[in-house]
Structure formats: structure tokens, C-alpha cells
Image (tube, rainbow, N blue to C red):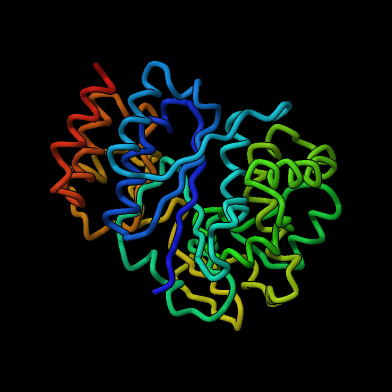
Length: 315
């Protein structure tokens, strides 16, 4: 079976850094993929305070990670959101290896949902493709070229083989991940500056740009989903692209932080959920109780370690 790598960027903001060992553990032990974590900052930045606990946890779990130094003019979050799309710059990754995007605070639950690319002979699989009401290739390219935002394909979980990431992002043979990102940001900057809301553009640029990159490819289908999009539930399959929709915004099968916790966690049934968008301040006692319920249901053999990690982090 062809290997799948999950690429995740992580800033030093505790809402994300606390979660990253737990998220990586879920991807590795529950889903069966290989996570690669891009930690924003240098080794010294991650060798202090609670960051040191995060690094120790990643080492204990044997999770692969790389440090990515800050980039002048761009926030830590922007670097974290955009570095993952350049994971294929690692020349050790075989051309046919699948690389899937994910977030530090997005937990995979329904295992089969994340394996839909396996055996697919096309080039891109976009899970929750209707998450931002994507209207199709023509809509994206006309609005991008005019300067501004558009309805896009969520970065999580766009999945392509390494060779197609390298083509889409024009990753040169001599680039490492950060060098490849610098080139992308340079290309992206004129378009960002043309957007009416530059702050929104910087926040959404990873998702907007990945959608533009996909739509620029000659193999991406011209056909668009019906406009406006139905609520979801379809799988739109073409020769080279698989668009997998879900119901709702946020999806009705997602444990989501925007929904009243008691509604979802009060009578918790793991079989209802595909993924979880984890609470802000995930290390608080209140939120940890919810999160640990999810984690222990999925990974009961790791309960002791997860408790120990939480206790050390919050000590």
C-alpha cells in the first residue's frame, strides 16, 4: 500500500502547540498515516517552557517534526498555515507518496473517511470540498485574476501525491520546505496586496491559494458543482479529481467548538462523528474533560500517557 503523509504546521500559540502531540498520535495510531509536523520557530524557541514539554512528547511518540524559522513580514500563523503545502520539497519523499493536509486542532475520528484516496488513480482528493461553498474552476480563476477572495476548497484535507504537489506549487529540485514557501509567498504577495481586506486575505491565503493552484492545473475539471451548492453529501468524481462533500457548515458529523458542548459531549457517541475541531484553550480543565473523553474512546491504550502529558503541561 502506498504511504500517506499528513502535513501539519504548528505555531507556538498554546491553542495549537498543546494539541499537536495528541493530533499526531491520532493520525499515527488511529488513522495509520505518518504525520510530519512543521514547528514554527527555531530549536531554541521550542526548548523553553511548555514548548519543551511538547517536544518531549513528540520525541516519546516518535513523531517526525521540523523547525521552520520565522519569515519577515508574515505572522507565525500564516507561516504555519502555508508551510505544509510545501512538504513535498523533501526529496526523500517518493513521487507517488500521498500527502494530506491537516490542522493542529482538527482531530480525525472516522477512519474510513480519511482513506478514500487509497486506490484512486486520479490526482487530487478533496475531503469536505463544499466547506467554503466552492463554485468551481471558472469562478475561482476569474476572481483571483481580478484580485480578491472567492469560495474555495478547504485546505483540510486536500490530498495529492508528492509529484503533483511539486508541480502545482512549482517546487524546484533545490528547494527545501522553507525555501519553497518563500517563493510561493513572493508569487502570492501582489495578489494579496490587491485584496480589499488584506488581513482577511492573509488569514485565508493558504486556502485561497491552494484552490487557485488546483484550478490552474490542466487536469482539474472545468465542470462546477451546481450553483449555489446543495448542502452536501455527494461524491463528485472525475478522471483526476474527487470532491467529497459533507452536510452542514460546520459539518453535522463534526464535534465542533462553535456548537454547545453539552449538545455534542453530553451524551457522547463516537460513532456519530467524523472529526473534531477542538476547543480554544484546550488545556483548561473544562475543555480537557471533553477532549479526553474523545481521546480515550479512540485510543484507550494511550490513556495513561495522555493523562501524564496533560498533567505535566498544566503543572
